[in-house]
Every structure is written in C-alpha cells, then in structure tokens.
Image (cartoon, rainbow, N blue to C red; front, side, top):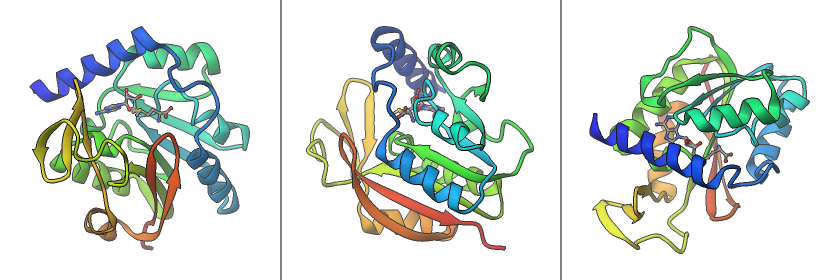
Length: 207
Ligand SMILES: C[S@@+](CC[C@H](N)C(=O)[O-])C[C@H]1O[C@@H](n2cnc3c(N)ncnc32)[C@H](O)[C@@H]1O
C-alpha cells in the first residue's frame, strides 16, 4: 500500500542520512519503563519501532530479553553494529504484527504510535495487547497537543497534521488517549517532557 511504502522510504532515508540521530542515551521514558519493568520482574520485552536500539539496551542491561520490530533495514544494521546480536529484531512494519507467536510480559513503544493513522493506531494497540501475557504491562509514549508543532503544517484529519515533508503526526490529549487505550487496560497516564511534550501511557493486561 502506498502509505506504507512512503513511510518505509522516509525512515530508511532518514537513517541513511542522519545515522544515530538521537544519540546513544536512552530517553527518560525508557529509563522509567526499565525501572517499572524491573520492579514488576518483567523478563521479555517487545519494542515496536526499536530504531537503532538506543532505548532497548537498557532493558538488556537489567537482565531482560529484548525483541524489536523495525521498518528500516539501515536502523537494524546500526543496532547490530552498536549492540551486537543480543536483541532479535524483525524487519517489517508493525501493521504486519504479529511476527512471532511469543507472549511478552512487557512492551515498550516509544514515539511510534503518533506516526500512524487511526486504523493503524488501533491495530498496533490491539496487536500489542494480544501479544501480552495475562498480567503483562505495556508502556507507550505519544506526542501531546501541547507540542509547538500542533496545528502546524498540512491538516490531514482531526488532530493529525503533516508537520513537515513525510512526517504525519497525530497529537493526543487526555480524551484521545483514553479513547484509544482504555480498552487495552490503561491504568496510569502521566505527562513527560522529552524533546517534545509526550504522554506516558501504562496499560496492564487483564487476567
Ligand atoms: C520516532 S522514531 C523512535 C525510534 C526509537 N524508539 C528511539 O527513540 O530510539 C520511530 C521509529 O519507528 C520506526 N517505524 C516507523 N514506522 C514504523 C512501522 N510502521 N513499523 C515499524 N517501525 C516503524 C522508525 O523507523 C523509527 O525507528
């Protein structure tokens, strides 16, 4: 489908051009998720949109196994170069989940969901939920309407804009977070300042 190919090409050329564009330090949200997963004795973490792995190594360093999904082949090669073969990474789009039959007790998805359209977001949430063990946890981060870029660029649909060439963002508020995540076991919603204002969404799979 055209959108998918455009998205794939956009990320592939971004990683070719800008390489390790976010550096090697994990995001604040990844550190919080690691602390949370560690406290809950999570063992197997799935990271959709793993990029070149900067937000994944921290889980491995704390004894967890990591599996990633990533659309850019170049990002996967970079992850291999920097972090070796400790993480299994599936090459493909989250829209094609599941990539395996494994049940994970933790899922960490950083700054990916807001790149998707409404039906892709809904599928991502339900595919992740389906791959969670009963009682498992998912932590998502998503851009907030408080971002400077909200309302800028080409209007696509309610709260969704093409802010610059090839980058389409859905900006969340409390209402849209609850609308999309309540049925996936949302139990804690906080705001966090990364390079942009984000929501940190924690969900637990009902047992
Ligand atoms: C904003 S970046 C965040 C990357 C990473 N989580 C980090 O911060 O280091 C989004 C990541 O998701 C990947 N991505 C975008 N669309 C995807 C899709 N449909 N399926 C899988 N990965 C995707 C991009 O290639 C990129 O690595």
